[in-house]
Length: 371
Image (cartoon, rainbow, N blue to C red; front, side, top):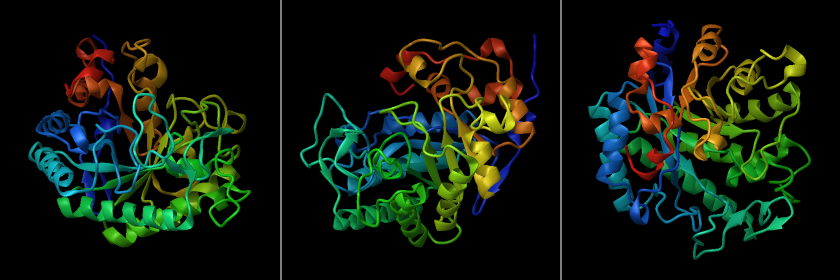
C-alpha cells in the first residue's frame, strides 16, 4: 500500500476571528433541494456530515440575496426571509455541533439562464446581456445597483447574526458580479462600466465595502473569482500579472480577506510564459500579488475537470501528490474540494491517512440526493 504524507493539509490556519483546524474547504455546489428557497432538515444533516468528516471549512451552496430575480431556480435557497433564515440557523447549529466551521455563499445569478424556469421579475445584469451579443432581461439602473449592494450587506449581517463563521460573495463564473468584470457583458457608459478591469470592478468593491460595514472589522469575508465563464470557458479577464494586480489589489483593499480563485484544473499554471509549466496557478498569483489569503479549487482528487465530471466522465480517483507538493511550497493557503465531497462526506478524514483503496471518485448519482 502506498501512502502520501498529507500533514501539510492538516495545519491550522487563522483568518481574523476564525481558526480552522485544517486547510480543506468544501467548495460551494448548487444542490437545489430547498423548496421555495427554504433549506430543510436534510440540508442541515448534509452539511453536518461533512463537518463530522473533518472538512475544515464548509462553504454553502449558492444562496441568493433579497433582490427580485436574484435566483434562476425556485429550489435554490434564499438568504432572506424568516423561513429561510430559520432553516440556515438550523444548518449552522448542526455544523457547529459536529465540530465544523461554515460560511454561506451569497449570490445573485444575474441573467444566467435556466432553460426549465423563468422568474416573474425581469432578470438583470450589467448591460442586459446573458452572454456577449445575446440580450436577456434589463440593464441595471444605478438605483438597482444601490439596492443590490444593500442586499449583499444585509445578507452578510444576517450570516453573522445567525452564527456563521465567515461569508463568501460569489463574483465568478459569469453571474451578476462577474458580468460587471467582463468587458464583453459590461457595456455601460456610467461609473460602473469602463475600459479597464479596475473600472469595471467598482460594483464588486462597493459590495465588499458594504459587507465589511455590515459585519465589522473582525468577521472574515471571501470573494470568489474566476477568469473563465460558463458562457465561454476560454475567457481571461487578466492576461498579465500587472492586469491581475490592478484587478485584485483594490478588491482586497475594499474588504476581501480571502480570494477564492476558481479554475477548472488547479494544477494548471496561470501565466506559463512567465514561470513555466509548473508555475503558480491562479490562487498562487493572487496570493503573490495581493498578500491575501487564497483558496485554490479545480478538479481536486479527480481524473477529469468540472464539466466532464458532471457529465459522468473522468470521475475516477486521481493522485493528490500535486496538491501536496503545491501546499508544501505555500503556493496558496487553502484548497477547496467539490465533487468528491458530494459522494463521500468522509473524504477529508480518509486523506488524513491517505489509504487510497478507500477513496472514492465523484459519482454523478450523488447529484440526485443529499448524500
